[in-house]
Image 1 (cartoon, rainbow, N blue to C red):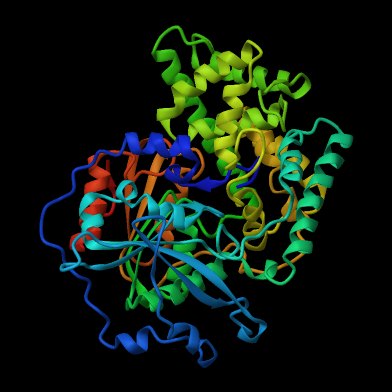
Image 2: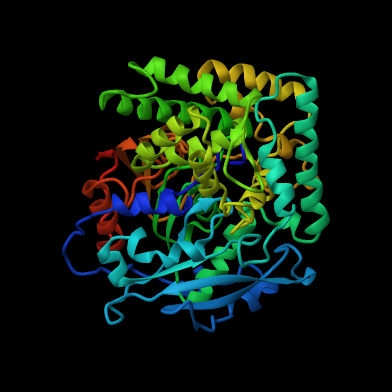
Length: 518
């Protein structure tokens, strides 16, 4: 969820490398059968009306579509900065639509979110042919939006590109008080930069705010209920929507869950354990292929990685990047993490590690760039590495006390020797965040909603499988699909068992059996 606390975002939106890997694994066979449109609520007008009179003008708007980027359609959605006080002003949310191939039998709109927080739903929807099955693509308009503060929707900017390079270069595993203070200084720079540049919007970019925007979007699309695909952090956004607007839940899939009741500490420790498990799976695969350069056993390979990162902590190597000339522990860790999002990148990671061991860090730096949405040589193509704090720190504030993170490091390392210390310090900016807001961690039941399909992957690094089970147990009306596999999220990057079940749910309304194992 940060430079060190790994963000939860869908593999298909985790940079060009991860997108290509996900596409390569996505060959699905969609189920047959005619499309079945959802049954509208008996009193749809009442069910989908504006929550208050002061919001009526937002709920009555209709989107004005225009052609953009070739074959897509784009529009702007107007929403209030503060839903409790709309008089404070408005912002515009960028929306992109890829129209259903079969307009005659079109079921409706499917709103998609790739995760983050900070992933661009606009860019995600542009990949409609690859992120949903052929039958879903045929009968649904695929609609993506950049959540408030993200991409083209009043983007949050906190640091210059050079300052962000410095922030991401900071030692992620401080060894003494001086290094801890340096890390604290970087955290304050991020927090203060966000406040100085985004003073009006910053208190209003929580997940609850984004969920309210989604309901305005639903109304503007003309849908009585919201059909939704949320991956990674997008599951938290979707669950939050379902809690606030349960009767407006249509066909909902939440894949790779961030459980809404997780505290900041629980999330960081869970991700440490998740990445440790995923790393062991990667090393096991390397060993099983024979002649693994990391060692002859999984334990040897894991120790090789820890020793490698420890050396980079004191002796960085050339990165081949003009703006960040040295590959240190921080950038190498991001590069490793990027490859763990999809097993199609494991071979690339091994080659990059071998090159780095020989003193050439350029391949590992390119992996890190793909994670950070960064161009080689500097320049960031998106603002995810900044807005991720703006959202997370409202949703899950943390302690300003360095002793708290020292204890996190000790506790996490017991569970995850490779990733524990790295993840332990990642939420430090949220300990010094200048604004408060959001609802905080809480259980969600969404009582009164339609059926919600929850999907979990057993060796998911960023959103551990247990979180999917946790959310399914809290929801009043849900079924769980388990994918026994590697990588981050399952739909359209796993197997036909998962893909067919979800395609059938979207197109025919057939709810997968709770406990389906794929």
